Image (tube, rainbow, N blue to C red; front, side, top):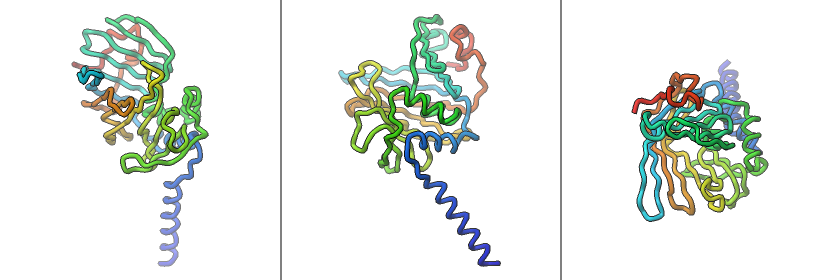
Length: 252
């Protein structure tokens, strides 16, 4: 009986090790593993106050306060400044709407890959995430492993040593999005390196409380989150441009 219990214990441990050390051979596999790890627990909504710092080439900085609300998958609202200003952005299902003084001032197609890979991946079928990544130019057939900040990571979208192709990095153990390389929105000739830092456990998932953006190894932008809340109740009209002025969740 003692030998039987020992054998069963070894089988359980061995099975756990095999499950943890998945043999992921493509970006599709990585996205599927990310989804499967957290899909039953990851929060649906998120709000936080953000200190946004722009680092200018002349050495000066510009600091703004943004208020952000997320509903995954596919919805992000950014209020810039106080609620009375009614300035900000709405990103809903691949469309960006710019709001100025409470009025819509423009729209354009835009997939925010930070939203897709940092949040949506855990709340939507992995096939949809893969389709978005492929449409945005990420080669999911290319994958290799690196070490980043002392942790093993999967790199999807580039061969080893290539930092000039669109790619995303995922923590191998926790299956959390860590890093993204993509052309800058302001200047597509410049490649930006965006990093999710200071991960904290939150409401059945995780949140990176700091985001840093680098161009040519120089920090150009950073985000620092405070008053972070997982699964807050949000008005359904929060992400409706026609209701932008009447659905402020924040209390600046």
